[in-house]
Figure 1 (cartoon, one colour):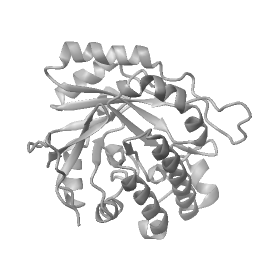
Figure 2: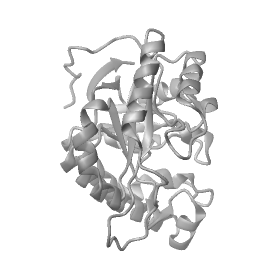
Figure 3: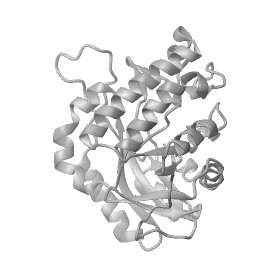
Length: 289
């Protein structure tokens, strides 16, 4: 039976946070770190964590189709920029340095040397799967050839494999947008019961590894009109013993920073959570909601 986390740093005041934000250190984002912080302050957030994309070129001989990033996150430059923002604005807002690690197989192949060098400097790492066989899963080009049910199953099977490998490497703190395939305009409603076995295997892996789940509010702004994951899926994670849950907007521009954070607090309460989770130095602390 689940019990309240016995965290000495547990807080009892609800806070508004955004634990999934991309700045111009991510090649698909448009706002500078300074613009992100200004937007977070205007929206009344208590904390914002940058989670820049961390992806690697496929290693020599890699045979599967794979996305090739324009550059690997320059961690030294990035961490210095976040440190400068903390120095300038840290009394107004908690500012974290994080990453969103791609869980595609080739990314995990290149991760070890990077982690060895920079692991102590990150506050928070999301593990996310964005593509299957080189195709972004939110596109009809992924969904349509398979059909919704098969597209969801293939994605979840790939995600489980990536999460297991990341867990062995202690690479991630939470797993992000686990049903991202819902974003495809041709996907339609997702029925979690159809993928119950995959979801249960995923959640067992996450929980056994001491990781958590992200509630990604970008779904409110996209075709699902609900977070990733949906309420039924999040309730399953909770019933299986999941405790760690974070909230993030997946913003790639300052205009959307913090959107959905307040609604997400009600959402995770409805799933049975009494706490949300914050991170510092990759160590969780729990805040009563």
